[in-house]
Length: 223
Length: 59
Image (cartoon, rainbow over all chains, first blue to last red; front, side, top):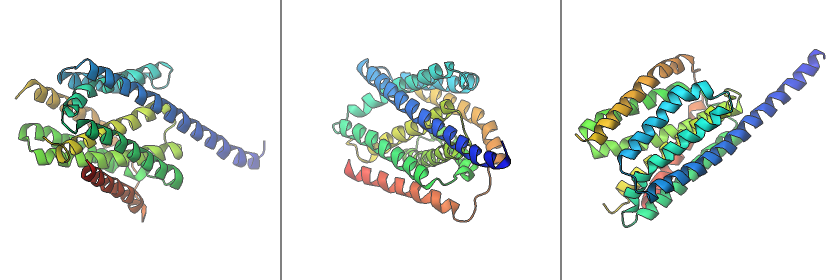
């Protein structure tokens, strides 16, 4: 094979592998979102106590930090992804029950659900169609995430409701940035593992949904 | 302070500890933005915030 053959064949192969990562990520993301929603529905039906949220989230994050890095390149990574998203969905139960108890609770939950879907599809569509490289945002997004975690930790002790709402608004902006960043990484070949991409996008969607629920519940609710 | 607050504080503290090394690495490795690149990212994020404001008015 001469040099010209390489120059023609390599971009085609790269394009095929990028499309494969995109396809696999979105298929797995859809499956995990459905599974997560089923687990959330089960948690609401069982009327799980508020502590379930923390315990499920804690267990899910232990899996993300300790187990996922070791299994992300094997088929067992798929089991870990479903375990993580199932736990996080199950943890949503007590929060959903709390909002559903409000007089306009079902409307708030449905609006947050639909709104999250529109935000995710809109941002993914934007990144996929423009094919812009958002890799420059990585440092800013992770620094912003750390700032938000420190602020949220401080607000546990300060208990300022307005700060809590501001945190939710900033989380939505940061997670929107993460959707652009992650989608761009897949398009430009920066990330080739669909398991880690699925978890990354799932966390962005999950955080947008919870933050949107918080904002709509506080500003649009009847509490 | 109840158990939920203590649990939340522990979880957030653990997240900060685990995220810190990755944040340092990402800050070191991230490329600088070129002219106009921030604009292409900020515009859709502002659109998201406008959409959230619309949802708040709807509920």
